[in-house]
Length: 60
Image (cartoon, rainbow, N blue to C red; front, side, top):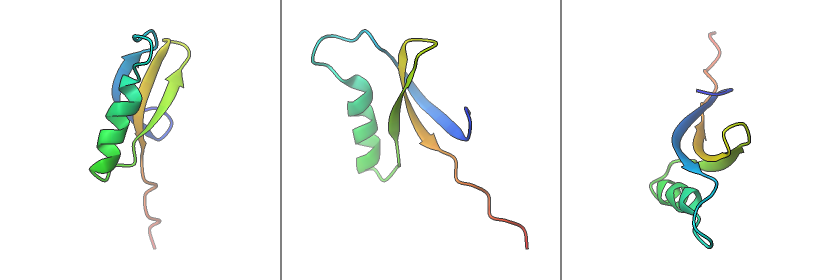
């Protein structure tokens, strides 16, 4: 987990021209109801497909 995010998959940034594997993977997850998004990890030169962790409910 990175800053309240769960990394589901990593994709190298140097994919074939016209290919967007991270976006395609995230889109498939979104059609299944997950709130997946793609972010760039500059340190590793990779696209990450993530979901944000839900904030815990406050204890009453």
